Image 1 (cartoon, one colour):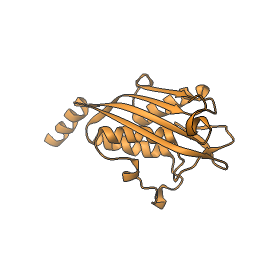
Image 2 (cartoon, rainbow, N blue to C red):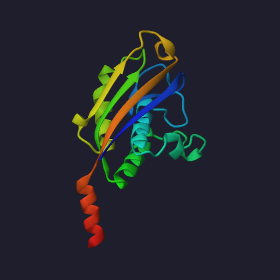
Image 3 (tube, rainbow, N blue to C red):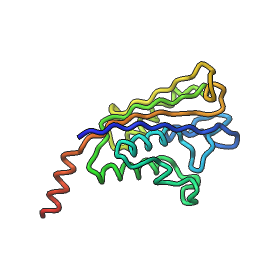
Image 4 (cartoon, rainbow, N blue to C red):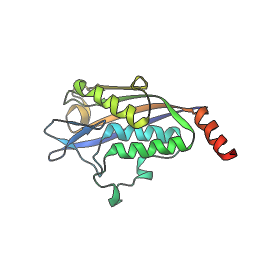
Length: 171
Protein backbone atom coordinates (compact mmCIF):
# COMPACT_ATOMS: atom_id res chain seq x y z
CA UNK A 1 0.00 0.00 0.00
CA UNK A 2 1.19 3.51 -0.77
CA UNK A 3 0.18 6.78 0.82
CA UNK A 4 0.78 10.34 -0.31
CA UNK A 5 1.05 13.35 1.98
CA UNK A 6 1.43 17.08 1.48
CA UNK A 7 2.84 19.53 4.02
CA UNK A 8 3.04 23.30 4.11
CA UNK A 9 4.59 25.67 6.61
CA UNK A 10 5.42 29.35 6.87
CA UNK A 11 7.31 31.46 9.40
CA UNK A 12 7.98 35.18 9.69
CA UNK A 13 11.53 36.51 9.25
CA UNK A 14 12.78 38.52 12.25
CA UNK A 15 16.04 39.90 13.58
CA UNK A 16 17.95 38.16 16.39
CA UNK A 17 17.14 34.62 15.21
CA UNK A 18 19.20 32.09 13.27
CA UNK A 19 17.98 31.07 9.82
CA UNK A 20 17.79 27.29 9.80
CA UNK A 21 16.45 25.44 6.76
CA UNK A 22 16.67 21.68 6.37
CA UNK A 23 18.86 21.58 9.45
CA UNK A 24 21.41 23.94 7.88
CA UNK A 25 22.25 27.25 9.54
CA UNK A 26 22.39 29.81 6.74
CA UNK A 27 24.22 33.11 7.20
CA UNK A 28 21.60 35.85 6.91
CA UNK A 29 20.69 39.00 8.80
CA UNK A 30 17.34 37.53 9.89
CA UNK A 31 15.97 34.19 10.97
CA UNK A 32 12.59 32.53 11.31
CA UNK A 33 10.34 33.18 14.29
CA UNK A 34 8.81 30.17 16.01
CA UNK A 35 8.50 28.14 19.19
CA UNK A 36 11.08 25.62 17.94
CA UNK A 37 14.00 26.54 15.68
CA UNK A 38 11.26 27.39 13.11
CA UNK A 39 12.74 25.28 10.29
CA UNK A 40 9.91 25.62 7.74
CA UNK A 41 11.34 22.93 5.48
CA UNK A 42 11.49 20.29 8.19
CA UNK A 43 8.05 21.30 9.46
CA UNK A 44 6.55 20.89 5.99
CA UNK A 45 8.19 17.46 5.66
CA UNK A 46 6.85 16.39 9.07
CA UNK A 47 3.34 17.54 8.12
CA UNK A 48 3.54 15.66 4.81
CA UNK A 49 4.49 12.42 6.56
CA UNK A 50 1.88 12.86 9.30
CA UNK A 51 -0.70 13.67 6.62
CA UNK A 52 0.13 10.55 4.63
CA UNK A 53 -0.37 8.53 7.81
CA UNK A 54 -3.64 10.37 8.61
CA UNK A 55 -2.18 11.46 11.96
CA UNK A 56 -2.98 15.16 11.88
CA UNK A 57 -0.25 17.76 11.85
CA UNK A 58 2.91 18.80 13.67
CA UNK A 59 1.07 21.04 16.12
CA UNK A 60 -1.07 18.12 17.28
CA UNK A 61 1.99 16.05 18.18
CA UNK A 62 4.32 18.85 19.34
CA UNK A 63 2.17 21.78 20.53
CA UNK A 64 3.72 25.23 20.38
CA UNK A 65 2.47 25.99 23.89
CA UNK A 66 4.39 23.05 25.39
CA UNK A 67 7.63 24.32 26.98
CA UNK A 68 9.47 21.06 26.27
CA UNK A 69 9.52 22.00 22.57
CA UNK A 70 10.76 25.57 23.07
CA UNK A 71 13.80 26.02 20.85
CA UNK A 72 13.92 22.31 19.89
CA UNK A 73 15.89 21.27 16.82
CA UNK A 74 13.21 20.52 14.21
CA UNK A 75 15.29 17.60 12.96
CA UNK A 76 14.57 15.91 16.29
CA UNK A 77 10.86 16.37 15.61
CA UNK A 78 11.34 14.80 12.17
CA UNK A 79 13.16 11.82 13.68
CA UNK A 80 10.21 11.32 16.06
CA UNK A 81 7.76 11.49 13.15
CA UNK A 82 9.88 8.95 11.24
CA UNK A 83 9.69 6.61 14.26
CA UNK A 84 5.90 6.87 14.14
CA UNK A 85 6.01 6.07 10.44
CA UNK A 86 8.25 3.05 10.99
CA UNK A 87 6.04 1.79 13.84
CA UNK A 88 3.24 1.63 11.29
CA UNK A 89 5.46 -0.38 8.90
CA UNK A 90 5.92 2.40 6.36
CA UNK A 91 9.06 3.68 4.72
CA UNK A 92 9.67 6.80 2.68
CA UNK A 93 9.52 6.16 -1.05
CA UNK A 94 10.45 9.72 -1.94
CA UNK A 95 10.30 13.30 -0.74
CA UNK A 96 9.97 16.38 -2.94
CA UNK A 97 10.08 19.79 -1.27
CA UNK A 98 10.15 23.44 -2.32
CA UNK A 99 11.36 26.36 -0.22
CA UNK A 100 9.80 29.67 -1.22
CA UNK A 101 11.80 32.81 -0.44
CA UNK A 102 13.20 35.82 -2.22
CA UNK A 103 16.40 35.97 -0.17
CA UNK A 104 18.82 34.55 0.71
CA UNK A 105 19.87 32.46 -2.25
CA UNK A 106 19.86 28.81 -1.17
CA UNK A 107 21.48 26.81 -3.99
CA UNK A 108 24.78 26.31 -2.15
CA UNK A 109 23.00 24.91 0.93
CA UNK A 110 20.60 22.50 -0.76
CA UNK A 111 23.04 19.53 -0.98
CA UNK A 112 23.48 19.59 2.83
CA UNK A 113 19.71 19.92 3.31
CA UNK A 114 19.21 16.85 1.12
CA UNK A 115 21.83 14.93 3.12
CA UNK A 116 20.19 15.95 6.42
CA UNK A 117 16.70 14.98 5.30
CA UNK A 118 17.89 11.66 3.86
CA UNK A 119 19.75 10.86 7.08
CA UNK A 120 16.80 11.73 9.31
CA UNK A 121 14.31 9.89 7.08
CA UNK A 122 16.63 6.86 6.87
CA UNK A 123 16.73 6.83 3.07
CA UNK A 124 19.24 7.29 0.28
CA UNK A 125 19.81 10.86 -0.90
CA UNK A 126 18.44 9.92 -4.32
CA UNK A 127 14.99 9.68 -2.68
CA UNK A 128 15.05 13.31 -1.54
CA UNK A 129 14.64 16.35 -3.77
CA UNK A 130 14.76 19.89 -2.40
CA UNK A 131 14.51 23.01 -4.51
CA UNK A 132 14.10 26.72 -3.88
CA UNK A 133 12.17 29.34 -5.76
CA UNK A 134 11.30 33.00 -5.47
CA UNK A 135 7.93 34.62 -6.03
CA UNK A 136 9.36 37.39 -8.22
CA UNK A 137 9.03 39.82 -5.27
CA UNK A 138 5.29 39.13 -4.93
CA UNK A 139 3.52 38.36 -1.65
CA UNK A 140 4.98 37.97 1.84
CA UNK A 141 7.84 35.74 0.65
CA UNK A 142 8.70 38.07 -2.21
CA UNK A 143 8.69 41.07 0.12
CA UNK A 144 11.05 39.29 2.50
CA UNK A 145 8.53 39.06 5.35
CA UNK A 146 8.75 35.29 5.67
CA UNK A 147 9.71 31.96 4.17
CA UNK A 148 7.37 29.14 3.18
CA UNK A 149 7.88 25.50 2.25
CA UNK A 150 5.83 22.77 0.60
CA UNK A 151 6.62 19.06 0.80
CA UNK A 152 5.11 15.98 -0.80
CA UNK A 153 5.96 12.45 0.29
CA UNK A 154 5.19 8.99 -0.96
CA UNK A 155 5.12 6.36 1.78
CA UNK A 156 5.21 2.65 1.02
CA UNK A 157 4.44 -0.34 3.22
CA UNK A 158 7.76 -1.81 4.29
CA UNK A 159 7.19 -5.50 3.62
CA UNK A 160 10.59 -6.51 5.03
CA UNK A 161 9.95 -4.65 8.27
CA UNK A 162 6.46 -6.11 8.46
CA UNK A 163 7.80 -9.66 7.94
CA UNK A 164 10.55 -9.17 10.53
CA UNK A 165 8.02 -7.98 13.10
CA UNK A 166 5.72 -10.94 12.38
CA UNK A 167 8.67 -13.32 12.74
CA UNK A 168 9.64 -11.74 16.07
CA UNK A 169 6.10 -12.18 17.36
CA UNK A 170 6.00 -15.85 16.30
CA UNK A 171 9.35 -16.75 17.90
